[in-house]
Image 1: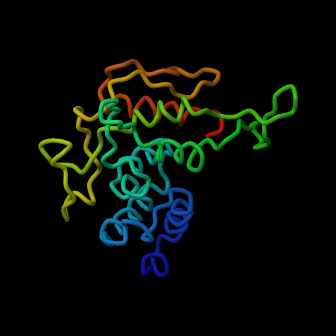
Image 2: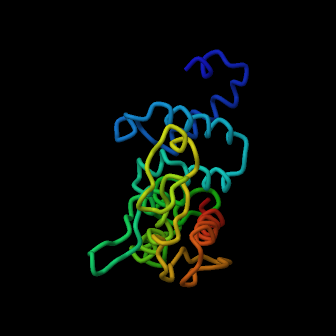
Length: 208
């Protein structure tokens, strides 16, 4: 609050506040126990106030704070025998609230419609499931394995780490739009490659 009110970098502070209204996390959640982590998250937004949105997408995606708030941290790969399916929370909210929205838009922000005058959806359930599989295998950094990852004072303010043993090996359906490079990710890619390709896919969508 002191930086926001009294800092000499008021444009940066206003941008950070604006970003916090889009890339929302809240202490009214499991994050109520992690005040240092919340302060670090706000610093992340301030650090990236004048940067590239694609870079901001990745830094927020890998922040433990967003990982906790929208259930990406500790998201496991699918396992039919144990009735486990990847959590869809972050995949859904990243598209719906943080980037492209629910319907396709014209360059002036008006809604695109099909021949019958109905809005054109930007994605369907199969795309949500594709992105949910992308966002598997990430947990607190510094552990020997996914199962051993635990929060510490140090790693609650470090980007999440990929643990390949819990990353979904499946092919993953992404957004389809004119000029898209990879509408489907090949099976067996590394978690870091899947993440980079998936965020590029969203960032290059015309709505963004």
